[in-house]
Image 1 (cartoon, one colour):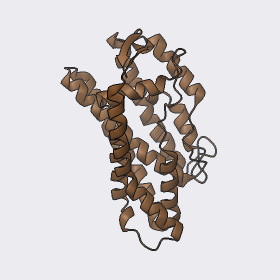
Image 2 (cartoon, rainbow, N blue to C red):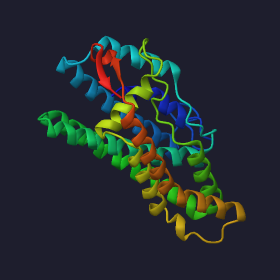
Image 3 (cartoon, rainbow, N blue to C red):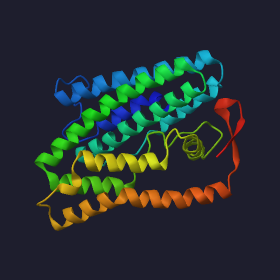
Length: 263
């Protein structure tokens, strides 16, 4: 919910991209119309989840609102460098990640008997899936008209790693809040390193990267890199998980009144 609520940051990010930004704030170009409509739809996700949490009484809303305030103030740096190729590769990956994480939250909510939360997260996941479809089609077109530069952009983005939108979150107490939150999400199966590898593998297949021909020398190197990356991520994650199991600890989360959670 906090990630969804930091929405002004994401519209700002899209408006940094060369050639597709909203030049006036109310431009009638197709790119600008899409960005504003996408923003409006994403805004409803945060509104709905915020109301649910407020009415549930299970969380410290003051601490959550502080986190949102800090996160919007901090912004984000996905390292897309004003480049629309990098920007739309990032959004393709990110929208699938949110589709998966909301879907997993819906599944967990249903398992624990909260059918209303399961319904809410399921609806949001469906929205994110449609957003993923739009962005992956944009990148598919980029591969069609400029395959070499697009595969170079994909490799560049994956070398940098896809930074999650809320990576700069802070609640005024925990300097490593995102790291701790991510560890809990990984442990519960909301969003995991396996999901990260699965998304990359999905996009490589969706865009037919392995079958691309006619690339430059650098393009072929980029192609080999992205096609071999998902299995490598999985191997590294298996090693990391074995180490984590041996050295788990607990940290307090201000969002749930300082309750200690295993990370």
